[in-house]
Image (cartoon, rainbow, N blue to C red; front, side, top):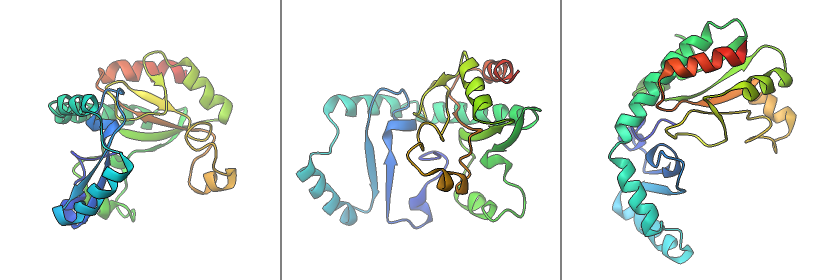
Length: 207
């Protein structure tokens, strides 16, 4: 969830880039859309298939996207700045066992060179694990007051979810664990609120 501000695959040699416009580009949790970018010649057959399937946006969705594009950089920058502060807080909390935030990739990690080469920043969506088990993770989510429980990402409001019980519940448990989707994992998409309010909310929930 880095594009189109913090990751631009076309600049690194990608032929086509498929982007979820539902998330940061729309950014207000009020539309569903997607886009494909690339050379005109490569996009031509996609345009033809889109016409046959009827998968283009309706005019109102297009208007909402155009309005949202005016504030895209402001929203993504504010969210990323807030996420950095929230991640720093969680990284030192005694009831948090790990924080999976791109900004924390250690030197020598195999993903670090890719991140440094391709990304302009760590973005504002990341995950963290709490001590205990599923019950403790649920308890934290239940106690949140400012942060909302939802599976969407990239909106102006901060959202949290429990991937194992929500977005990835249909994946076999063994596969989930192999992928690091544990019962204590919480995913958070930081919005544009004051990060101090988010930190206070997380602090009282973890307490």
